[in-house]
Length: 116
Image 1 (tube, rainbow, N blue to C red):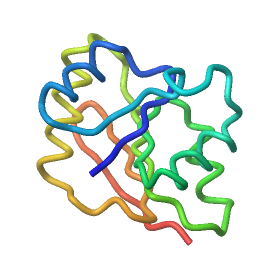
Image 2 (image 1 turned 180 degrees about the vertical axis):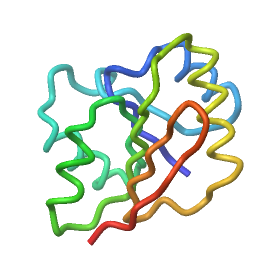
Image 3 (image 1 turned 45 degrees about the horizontal axis):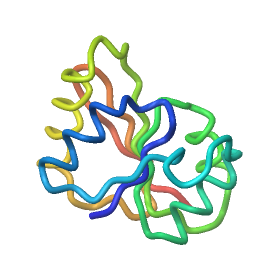
């Protein structure tokens, strides 16, 4: 599984996910200031699941008719990088299928929506 973290994901979270064996890049490692559409295109081209706090991606994903590798939308207060990492790792252990899905990860649960 490959991931692309939006610029709003703390570096500490990304580094800890890498330390846990996940293939994850942050958008600004590749190019700063990309538009939302460019970010989704990059995630699709590189076959990566996007992780973001930006709910605009959820709206774009629901409205677009193209294939999306998947989006994990974090809908929680970013209390700490450790809390975010813990929630993401819990989700990744529980869910293996992200293709064409919008997964909304909250503080205490997650829900998913199939796109297309």
